[in-house]
Image 1 (cartoon, rainbow, N blue to C red):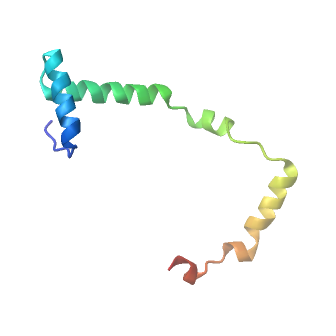
Image 2 (image 1 turned 90 degrees about the horizontal axis):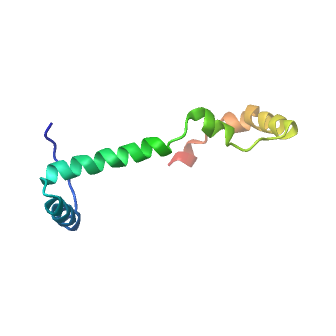
Image 3 (image 1 turned 90 degrees about the vertical axis):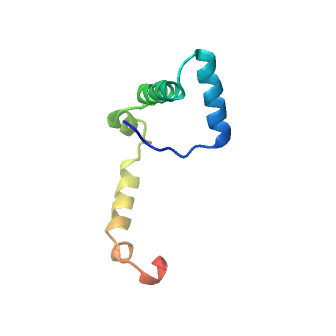
Length: 84
């Protein structure tokens, strides 16, 4: 697939030099680098369940207080001036 990317001149020069040292075309070097980066991101990503488990736990009292605040009419109303 062909695509156009906007990259800094300095980055392209560095990538071209690295690709040349490896004896491969710039496109192949960029493809491998992108693949490696995506794999690292996927390996370090946590699941939603893990993310939720890491959230701080609130006491029952704090949860009740929060519920009262959220259900308050003042909380649910929107002040149009605030969004300008």
